Every structure is written in structure tokens, then in C-alpha cells.
Length: 218
Image (cartoon, rainbow, N blue to C red; front, top):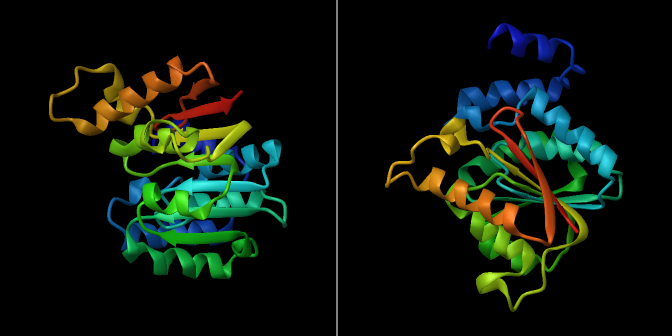
């Protein structure tokens, strides 16, 4: 961590003890622990939730549950989060921390591909957080908006919903020459272009950590 990052953390509201422990356990037990949202981004997501006051949240990509707990902390007590994780080996770790949190009762975890799980939930969401497989970001967006192969399904979002897509700058690769076999960067670029051209939404990219695309459905 450089000096500026350390300053930002020091002068942001402190991290909850349970989240500090989850961060530590993620680094000890999970592959690619840098995928965790972390203190500053987590607090940002919590505060966004408090400002937007959603009742229903969909999270695509639970990982070890850090961001889900941050959303839950910002939710009213009668709100809920459906969080979907494809890696069943992470479920036990995430659930163990959900069970210990005073906000854990708001979280419903689902194991499987979001592209298969979400249409079966038959819910509409006020806020959606996309942090799953980067190669499927365009597919997630089509599913949310009721486009493409999902045109026969009702949209998962509605007018006034917000979508937050993580890792949208992809370590700066979005402004570099993209290798022909770099499907992750290619799909992130395709997603950003699709959102920018979609007249049904407005968006702004927030350069926090690896970039968040904040999208409002008109």
C-alpha cells in the first residue's frame, strides 16, 4: 500500500472488526484474495446503499462475502440481498461470516451461474452489483435489461434501478493495445461501449480501485 492509499484508509471511517477478520481469512484461505472489495470500496458501497435506500439488491459474484456484508449494513432491516456465487468451495467461508453478522439475515446466497440462477428467482432489483466473470459482463447486462437471448424474460431491473459494475478499468488495460487472446479485457471494453451507447441508461465511471461503472436506469 502506498502513502496515499494509507492516508485514504486512515481518514475514512474505520473498518468493522468482522470485516477485518474476513479480509484476513480471505488472504489465508482463498485463491486471488485481491478480488475482495476491501475497506474503502466496501465503505463506499455501504454508503451508496444508505443514500439510494434500495429494498432489493442483486450481487453477481459473492467471493467470500465482504461486499455482501457491506451492502447489508447499508440496507434497511426489511431489505434483502440475493448474492450469487459460482464457486461452491467459497460458500462455507461466506456463510460463516454472514451467520456472525447482525446483518446476515438480509443475505440470501445462491450457488451456480448467475445467468441460470437469476432468471429463476423471478425478482426485480433496485440495485445490482456486477462482480462475476468479466467475460460474461455483456451477458449479465443483457439479462438485467431483458435483451438478447433474454428478450422473452421480464427485465431484472426497472426505471430508477442502479447497476454497479466492478473492475471496469481492468488494471488499466482498457487504454492499452489489447492482445487477440485477452478475452477479459475485450469483454470489459465491449461492456463499457454497450453501456455508453444505451439510451435507456446514464452512467459515470468512478476511478475507485479498479474502477466502478455506476449506471442508472432511466
